[in-house]
Length: 84
Image 1 (cartoon, rainbow, N blue to C red):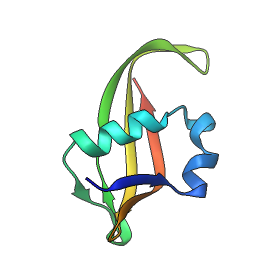
Image 2 (spheres, rainbow, N blue to C red; image 1 turned 135 degrees about the vertical axis):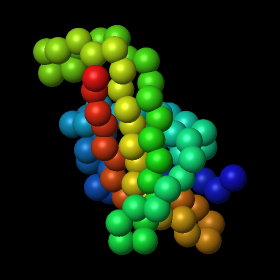
Image 3 (cartoon, rainbow, N blue to C red; image 1 turned 90 degrees about the vertical axis):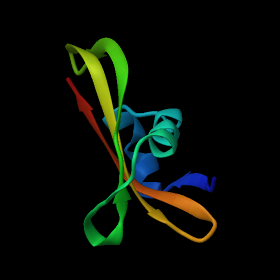
Image 4 (cartoon, rainbow, N blue to C red; image 1 turned 90 degrees about the horizontal axis):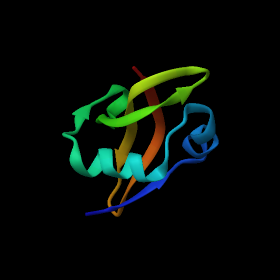
């Protein structure tokens, strides 16, 4: 499988959105890919969370990377996280 690289934008938002590189990699490698806007790809994976985020305890965290497939790597443009 191709290597996965986070763009500068995705790296800058890691702490703000609360995702880890390992979660992004697991989502891309395990979840089915779907077409996204602007010719990009997306997928999502739910992770057991069971902690507080911004003062509220959530059971689940969903990690949704948006990425492009290049000839030698997958480049993650951004990552959305959802807590529920």
